[in-house]
Length: 234
Image (cartoon, rainbow, N blue to C red; front, side):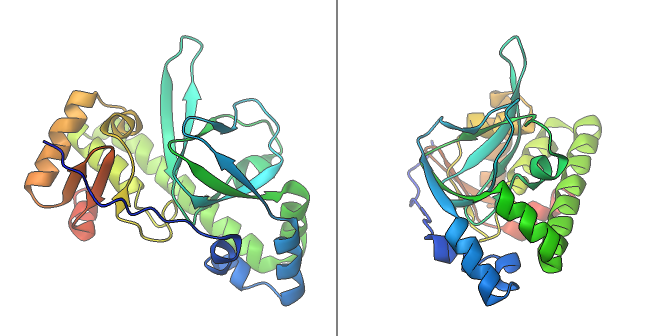
């Protein structure tokens, strides 16, 4: 039976989020002041949309608190979760660079706070700050690499490995730069992320718990051995 786990809720201020971001640290003082001036904050309730499929996105996002997911919904109501964003991560650059409507929904899985940098500021940074473009290039490349690996995994791997890969994705440095190992995510959400049945997901998590890789709680999973988990997807 799952037992309660200590709730490791991390909440960052605007300054803490920015100071912990490599791209911001590399900027000059005047540019840092511009970013701080233009940044706004938004709070979201569990289940609330930050962005929806088909809209023209107007901001670049950073997670200050909570957990968000990207998902795509079909006409018949079925949904596929593409990934999650943890505290300290930045996302949404692909949609802004493409200058096309969003192709997925962004949904808060629990109460969340998000920093929002306007498109105009994002574009100014791209045009004037090489270090910012270098950050975006690395981030987009890592995200592409991850999605390519996910596509291959869903064609080549069994359900157990898909669950392990989805779990590892939530602690991947791209999506979880603070290195948090306590994840406030339900088994149902993880099963959706892995695109396997909830029953198969539960069986895999029980196995990982028995092997000492994770701990299970109510709506939470804690990674006990990050290296061993990573070795399972190689």
